[in-house]
Length: 155
Image (cartoon, rainbow, N blue to C red):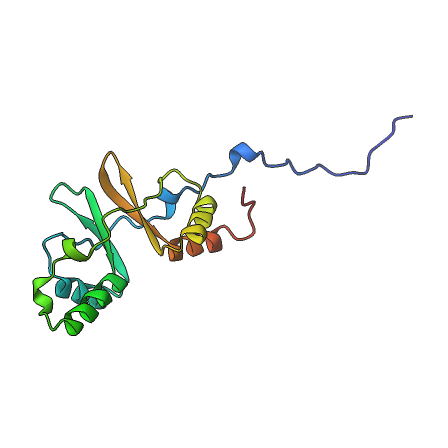
């Protein structure tokens, strides 16, 4: 007499190696608004308002990252110019930008990048490859990645 099993076929477990890595480069913005060191802060303020951004990378003529400028940097310039009664048109991006810029590796997992954001309090990180600016990841990009991955294994 043969014994029959009443269990149906079992669904194969997905192997961890089959899951996608969800790297920073998969979610970073590649089409960036960038600034040049010789631009005026007034030009930057106009761009920040026009494009509804809070800052951006500063690059030289070779597209190498040389700094980053933010709304806060522009506000400081406005405050200083009013306090010292100095015309705003004289300040350049190079004088107001942050020169020692933290970057993130494009191959980093987006959830590891989220921890870097939490620890650093930065709103954005440029991504550089071979000395050239290739993109930028923001906190909003990480949030978009989390929504896209909702319900999946986040390893």
